[in-house]
Amino acid sequence: MLTTVLVVLHVLVALSIIGLVLLQHGKGADMGSGFGGGASGSLFGATGSANFLSRTTAVLAALFFLLSLALAYTATRRPAEEGGGVIDVIRNQQQQQVPAPSQKPAADVPKPEAQPQGAPPAAQGAAPAQQPSDKQVPQ
Image (cartoon, rainbow, N blue to C red; front, top):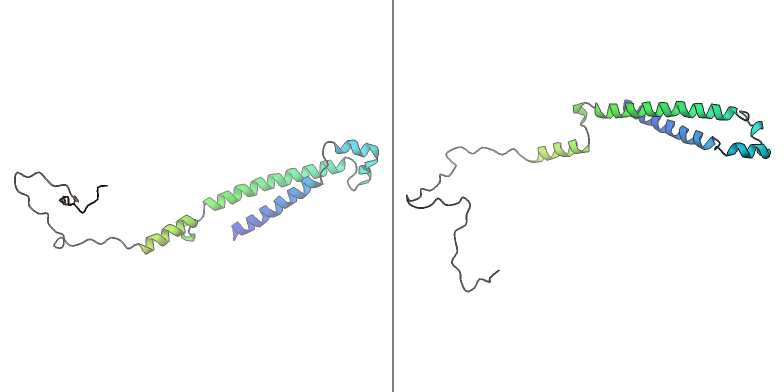
């Protein structure tokens, strides 16, 4: 709920900043008003609009910065029961799908075969050597 309110305020402040920046005159706009631009007859006067718009833009920029910090704080301080992000949801689903490996009783585990006393120990998992035949194609 709080995050939703912060996001809505963040978007409104961002749109307000965009509008105020577009309303402001550039540095070269004062030159045009000297030749009959009519800026002195505006609502804020010739110089009043610059002060009002620039101060309002500065206040909104500070508010935008504070809202950004608040959103970052709420995103990192989310309780664990809400389930963090997409990666956490995927991990939880994978853990539920894969059953835990069960332990076999000791009686079911096969015992290794006894080797003759002079024979070298065989490598575990090694396949028995096959006799070459004329049907096999060399690789």
